[in-house]
Length: 436
Picture 1 (cartoon, rainbow, N blue to C red):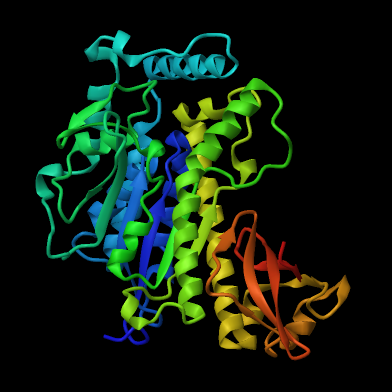
Picture 2 (tube, one colour; picture 1 turned 90 degrees about the vertical axis):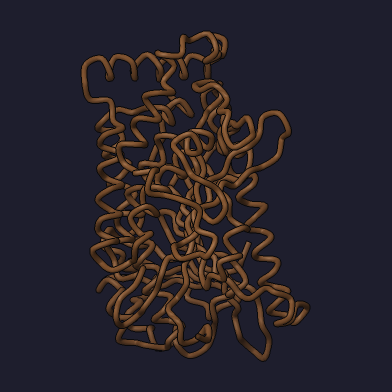
């Protein structure tokens, strides 16, 4: 089947971030229940999903329900399974809440430099959390029913980890590896909480130190689009000053390092394909990259900082899932807006814009320095003044951003389109200006 007539092939990558990946669960559940992952009018399929640490758990739980098909009932089963896992993971009993408070408090004090970092090797095996983690994951995934899938009958699953002894990155693959609860723990074994995991011939730590998440390897499944759920914010509003803020930002930057490198590689390939430096015989083809990034405002604790990534408080995890679902709605709204612009469809475009939405634009676009009604200028958005640059990633945070190419006065210039969206995913403001 040709790329133009086959269902859209979507690969999903889930960044790690401990408890913060409850946000990822909310995102995935909302996407799975939407038409974005397949409908009669717009067929699509998930061809691969990857994850690291908490993202690996979300990827695994969703993938396990999609192995036997991606009909609406299977997607609903995957969404429900994600919600059930995080409900089970929450600290609910008095003892669990007390233990959670102690662990989070210790993490916060370490971030402040008031107590030294601990080692899980001083905690007796029955109490170090390993058995509890393995039992938790096994309650939600039947590992006995999972075997290697060399023929690729099901979507590809990749779980990122790093071998502590060799320093080599490892992406456990559903194609070649026998996945177990220990495999998942290998991807999620934060070294201050869990002992290194001895499995599959290696000694593994949390995948934060490797591919977070495995991304470039997803290209082997020939996707049309790559969707990334990013937990660590790329940008923050102010300079970190306190020990907690500094430790939190260091954690986020470290977590984003490999992701930025792998996405940079994919964007470079896209640009080389676009300018003809790489041809059809290169083995590569254009992949649209979309990043759904958890806004920095979602978790902002001057007291806990990165320690909130080990917080299993019920209300905290529920709130993260709700925020993830809301972010997915904005992502879907941005996707609908982009498709309407690409398709030159004024009716579809008007349907995803609020009645009072505004438009502002500066050079290299037509000058509209003061806000004007967006609905009154839809025709101008569709007259070919700009096109979305397919070689650059689209990023959705509190707002959605697209790198665009502006076609004016016989020339082509780089530009940026930024859309504000409401909780229903409709555009409330569109700003056009130069690309930084």
